[in-house]
Length: 413
Image (cartoon, rainbow, N blue to C red):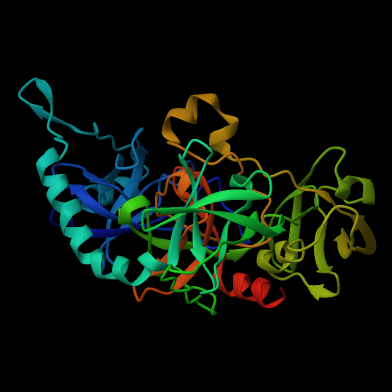
C-alpha cells in the first residue's frame, strides 16, 4: 500500500445490530510506516473490523482511534500472517503500536504526514471534484441568521424558488437565503417534522436556479458520495455506509436474543420490559413472530421496524416441549449514541448536530460535513442528489433523507 491510496473500512459502530449490515467507510491511507494510519473514520465498536484496499484485499485490522477524524490506526495484515501459528495455538501476541525496538529503546516511528503533503492531496481532490461542483453549485443556497451567519444549506427543488432545507435551522416563518452573493428573504411553505425538513419559497426572478435531480433508487452500500460547504469547498469523498432505515419507529421487545437451530433463542429477558410482561422467559425459542417463521435474526428484528409503542406482536415460542402463543405489547425504543452517553468520548466526536435521531427515514454516509451545512445535498459522482443532509450525528455518521423519499414528499405537496 502506498501513502494516500484509497481504503475501505467495515465495522459495527455502537455494537452488532443484526437488523443492519456493517457500516462502510471510505478513506485514504495517510501513513504506511510501521502501522497503518487512515482517515477512514472509526467509531466505538469498530475495533477488530477489516480495512480493505480497492481490490477487496484485507490490508489491516482496526485497533485504535484518536481525537481527529484523520486519526484511525490499523494493524497491518502482515503482522497477523507472521504470527498466525502462535495465534492459532491461542498464544498471546502483543505489539507496541507506533513503536519499534531499537536496541534497548522503544522509539516512536510514526510520523504524521507533512502539512504540505496533506494540503497538496487536498488540492488534488478539490481539482477532481471541481467539475462536479460546477454541476451542482446553482442547485444549492445558504440560509443565514439575522446576524448573517450561515445556519444551514438548502437544495433548490424548483426554478420558481422552492428550496428544501433542515427544519430545525429555521425559526419562525421567514429566513434569509443567499445565492451567488445576493441575499433575499424566503417564507416557510411547509414543515415536515418527521424528517426535520422545511420547504421554503423565495422570489427567484433573476436567479439562475437549477433544481437538483434526486436519485430515485435505494443507494447501494459503498456508493461514493460527497457534499459541499459554503463557497464550494468539498468535504471530501465518503460512501453510503448504511442503507435506508427508520430511526423513528422501532418497537422495543425487551430481551437479548441469539440465533438458534429452529428459531430465535431468548437468552435474557429484560426486567420490567414488554417481553417479561407478556410471559416470555429465559430459554424460550421464538419460532414464529406475526405469522412469520423466525428462522433468522434479521426476520425477528425486521418485524419491529416501523412499529411503535403500544402495537402488538404475536409470537409462538417453544418452552421445553410445550408450545405457547403470546402477545407482546411493544414499548418505545430509546436510541442512545454510545459516544453521547460517555462524557470521556466527547473529544472524539468533533462538531455534531443537536438532533441525532428520530427521523422517519434516513440513509447514512460518512462525509464529514459541519452541522451548519445540514440542509444541503449529498451527491453521487454524476451530480445527482442522493439525499438531503439533516444531521451530523457522530464522528463517522451523517444522516440524509433519501432522494426517493424527498421526491415522494414533494410530489404530495
